Image (cartoon, rainbow, N blue to C red):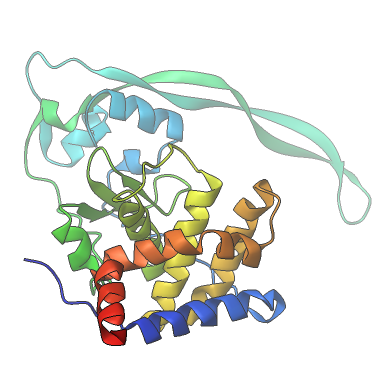
Length: 284
């Protein structure tokens, strides 16, 4: 089952023109920052660990790893024969230094410094048994517009709390979109990447033109769904990648316009060839 196109060509052109016009006067744009999904109080402790430790936990093929006492506090015990693996923890030292207070008197001040790191043994959730853990749901209160398009394409869209500095990503090989934000613009950006991949072989990593296509498309989608305040953030995002290819923002958007048009047509199920055929028949 497909989806019903929700936008006319006239509305699309109006949204595209609105975004481009706003980009021509960047000083007037509102820069409303994007927001991350916050970690809830009952989240696994490892979700707040360093990127290095999170990588070690991922390599151990688990999403949750804790020490024996931490598992006991959750009502779970280590399975017989289970083996731990190590993550690292900072080893802090305490020193003193002479400083002057506000009256100019010399006083001794204590401070902490990093001496090094130590290994800590933890066990995977899969190697424990006992009480079930609380179910943590990161889904937004209301699903974003066009979520059904991603689902129709067979993509698994999931939300997660902030574990790293990205807001979201599209993994073509895994057929999934992972979002660390409830902001619609973040979802629209990743959905645009997914649409782009349907007709173009995408390069790995943050390729400037691909990022400009995705963010320009996301800004247009935001306009169509009444979130034009996102123009400022979109401008800043595109500006960074446009600078890499020595272009200004409007110029870089104009150069990828045909790709953006295909992305939007893909999302809304519009067949440009059929439109051209109808127009040609109408002239005959």
